[in-house]
Image 1 (cartoon, rainbow, N blue to C red):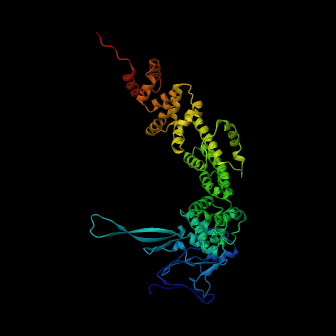
Image 2: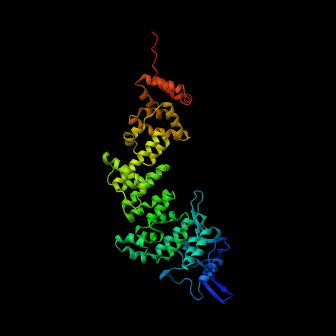
Image 3: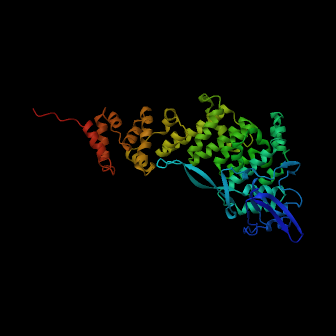
Length: 499
């Protein structure tokens, strides 16, 4: 039999504790004190904090023990229970693929380094080639699980704080919560799935899942960290909705978590809670909150998020249009959106209110000649520019003077000339087709579109003369000299030949 037996000899008590057999290699991890946590963890966990974990690779794969948690005479691989629920000694994240072999423990980074063979195809080589590729496996979920099983919350919290800057910190807690859910799937969660959907809300509010000590402990530790909301919503979006009640029974109601994220300015995180709120509370409350996120996203010009929120609202709406007679009432309703709290908005109303918010924002961009932002809003948020310019935009698109608007247009576009040209070329057809000739002249000048300018200036020689004179006597005469030459070749009258 390969490997040997790993045991711990306690000289003070005169006994020997056997951990495992068939051990090929083992490592001694840092204790909480050695890791320099600098946190008070309480007298009940003082003994545990001073001892480091023992890691071993044996015929059973990777294993972890804290010496004080192993009772003499009890096999460490036998099932044990916590609150009447069986847990395996082996941890799922340590069940390595047989093609991977651990070579060391990096305690300061909370990970195990392992190697794997990777086939490397080479045209020149006649025989198969193999590369050795290193990989890392986080150890934090496993260590936290062992501490939580022994009810050492303070020691687990100290361990989490010691690793809060690790790149896999958020993943570790997400995985820990996921495995806590999985460990209950065959008992508590499975039985709850068979109950009718009407009791879902009361389950979250009443928190009947108080037996989920592992999950509650993990969430108690995670809650003080800034990643708490992101971890909860990320896990929720990855699991089936039937598993949401036990998760939010421990973490808090989704509406409460949404408000916490929204108040903290975490709009992307708050938006992720909308689908979950819809599941628990219905479409109306979710739509009301979606409008709040939409309004703040527009003010921040986060147009990617605006597009996501609009798709959420439109996907739930049954009607895209309403009569103009309702505009005033919906305007008043939007006035109260921020203070609605648990109130709701119907799906059709939300569609109209969202459209009005976006159009009002686009009108503001138009008035300030923010061409790049307007192009981004149209591209990323699917703003229908043709519809907008035919309605609200038509009233906001009036220009005072050509040169002033041209200066603002150049200032609003990105310094990258190519990107600025692309924005102008994207917007030009919409303004041209909407009959907004003044805007079309400005945009045609920015992107130096000779064909469009010719069609606008050719009908009236006076217009062409005024355009040429203004450009020639402005600061734009040099950069636009090529444009003027092209237009002169097309629009200036050809002198008749001498007879």
